[in-house]
Image 1: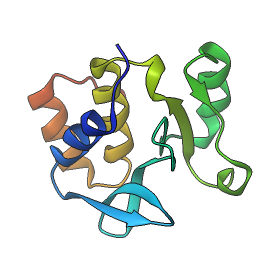
Image 2 (image 1 turned 180 degrees about the horizontal axis):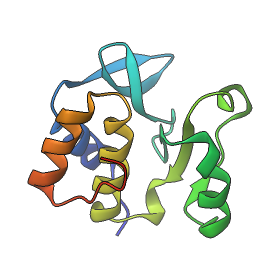
Image 3 (image 1 turned 45 degrees about the vertical axis):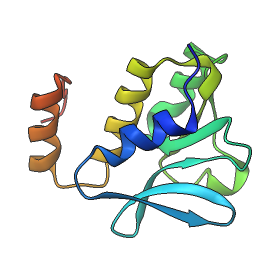
Length: 122
């Protein structure tokens, strides 16, 4: 059930304009200069773009899966997930929604349609 670094890489790099970079000993996935996902140094936790005003509810709803950002990242639109606690379908949804925060809305809408994701805010 647990996803791996290779699963994260495959999902992130399948999205338009995404690329992998190394920074501060971590694997990061970017569009341009913006990071939309990042693995912990031990590759067991993935940080991902997520609306600040919704992350507390996310963590409270499923604390066995989701974590608040590290203190230094609290000012960003960011949350974290334990890779051992999610499957590939959940990973795909998390990575897609993080990616869509850093790309033009039209591109995100086109990819959502192709992949069957529902966008609540078009």
